[in-house]
Length: 118
Image (tube, rainbow, N blue to C red; front, side, top):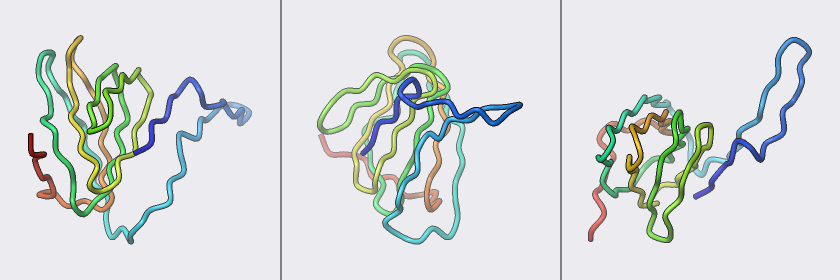
């Protein structure tokens, strides 16, 4: 699992526009397709703790949010990202307002979601 803070990434000036290279990640397996999801979690709700057996997942936060892993609770600001490897348990919580994020699944296996045991 990697956490990428948008404020810690330098801006690259490209003349009439600029970019930030959010991350470059080495994948552990071949990717035959990609899933790109918009996720909305109303305030007071959550995506219960789970993991994926056969995919890596990148979360890009469009709002502030909270992710709980087996090791820690991490607060995210708008523009921050998280890279989850297959098997990483994670729960996404909307404690202080609606959470909006983009989830990218590599590869895209729609039914690959295993709930974490308590």
